[in-house]
Length: 393
Ligand code: ATP
Ligand code: MG
Image 1 (spheres, rainbow, N blue to C red):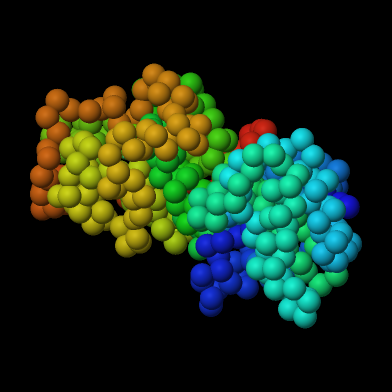
Image 2: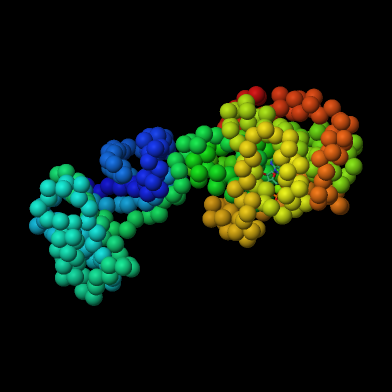
């Protein structure tokens, strides 16, 4: 008998055309996340099997990989004989408490002398006899007992751990996440990653109006997100000069609108440089003045690239729930200033006019400012353990 991990990838199997590419990407992601651990992996249609002395460590890593439906710790046996199956199951039931259960059998070896139903029935009998008080419930069992027969090997396992679901990271190419220190944007990044989008992050800082602590907070959020992808690149753009120029030259009710148009312009340029196909951000319809539909469309007007807003239609409470689930909430609520909040006017315009934006923007040489900010921006590679200064683009 060998103890092993069985990986199931449910949702993938529904995407017929892409399945090969999806599985290849998943394998690659699994292999890079398990670097440094001794293990053997075998592949089969619809399953992966991992053998190792370190199954618990491996399980923890697998729980952070998108595209995995379920992670099961089970047992592999060299015999498929029904008498051996009965004995093996009986041994596993030692000390187990079970109330309602169902045995579910799968055979990829179709010439087996018994049908799947027969096997389930016979093994169900073993449970009833071995575990006092157990009863069969085929509709809503508390314990599912799975048996699989694959060529000359059989597998027995009980319910496993829920995987992250979604698509393997990278199958959808790359997106650039506008990451502030708030609650919404890390959640937006997580949700995009869950759809298979690899992300790089972009943070606008405004020293001395924003502190080093605010930047560290964004770095910590990037680190938390990096556990789903081994590493994430964090781009930090100095936004001070642009922001101060806007502050001095633009009517204050339009400060935020113009500031966000500048952020979008920079985001698009950096996105194109790093080969990202979309911009991702944490805007949510109606949450603040700059997130009314009119504001969004006037701001969106400056870019030629899809802007995906994964939390656009979620309530704040729903976003907070997700932030707690992915462990970003406690960091996000740390009270450091954001570059937007410092320059917030008393009465930001709720329905900005594009004509006015264009008129006001003529007052500033923003192309030069933007190009300078981009040429001086700094990139870090952030991993779950560490940060490394990368380069200046
Ligand atoms: P969050 O909770 O994510 O900060 P928010 O509700 O505070 O969002 P805004 O400050 O209006 O909303 O920002 C909307 C979105 O714009 C953010 O979710 C983020 O994607 C992006 N953004 C805002 N400020 C910055 C910044 N300093 N650097 C990078 N992106 C930013
Ligand atoms: Mg914010």
